[in-house]
Image (cartoon, rainbow, N blue to C red):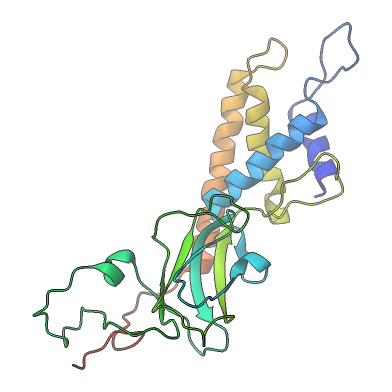
Length: 254
C-alpha cells in the first residue's frame, strides 16, 4: 500500500475521523502529518518486535576494514547482525563474544585447552562480536550495535569489505510530503501496523478524539499481529543446533 492509502484507511475505515466541531478551518480530528507520524512509529515498532526487515544488500550491511581498528559502529537502524563474512572468503566469520576475546588466561593455562581461543597475531579477521559498548556512526548518531572483529586488521586488510546479514529498522521515515511512497515493511503487514497507529491516535486526552476502550482494543490486536509475524519469521530463520570445533581460531592442537 502507498502511504496515501494507509492514511486513508486509518482515517476513514479505522478512526472514522470526523469531528463534531461547529467552527474552525478543519473538520478532522487528526492532521495528515500526525497520522503519518503514528504510522512511522508503528512501522518501526513492528520491525523491531518481529524481525521482518532482513537485509544483506543495502549500504548499511557493509563495513570497510581499517588498519588497527577492531570496532565499527553500525547504522542506528541495525538491530542485530545474523552473520558476517569477509569479502572473497568462502565461509562466514565465527560469532563470539567479549568474554571469549577478553577473558583472563592464567599463565599456566595449557595451550591445548579446547575451550581457549588461541591468541592470533594481527591479520585477516576470523571472528566477530556484537556485544561491545555502544558508539556513534560517521555522522555522530548513536549506534545500537557495534561490530568487533578479531584479530586486529592490518594494512593488508584495509579497504576489505565485511558483508553482513542484518535485522534492522526502516532506514528512512515516511513523510506527509511524499504520500506516494510505500513503507519498507512487507505489504502483507501494512494493515496490521495501522492498529498501533490507531492506538496512538485514540489514546490522547481530548474530548473529541479520546477513546481509551477502542485504543486498548487496537493495542491488543496489534500485539496479536506482532506475535504471529514473529513466529513466521522465526520459522523462516530456524536452523538446527550444531557444534563448531577446531576452526575459526579454535584448536585442539598445542
